[in-house]
Length: 129
Image 1 (tube, rainbow, N blue to C red):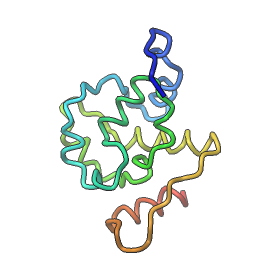
Image 2: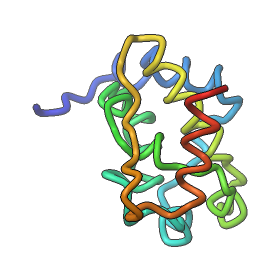
Image 3: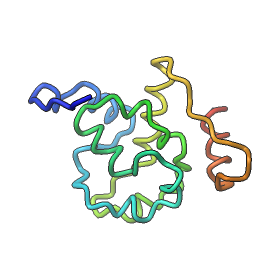
């Protein structure tokens, strides 16, 4: 569907909730893309890390249905590259928590050897903690 922008939507409770859970302001991101350029798992994501942050900034709860937060291995390569020091892995964790609280099923990774091993380890930690 079309995303209708308004003052109310941009001041969405969704973005505030993600910030509260993650301790990271999604508005600190100015979309330079360095996080996505350095992400080891970007090729396995349906939205790049900066795109996920943009959805949060826009108050778009569609971010909860993405595969990207479940693929994130929290390797912190994005945080190291971020000129604003945004810890995107913590934002991804907040999105996973919100998805689970709303009854959305986690996006699972295939065990057929097509996923990087660290992604499988990260998924195991996420789904068993």
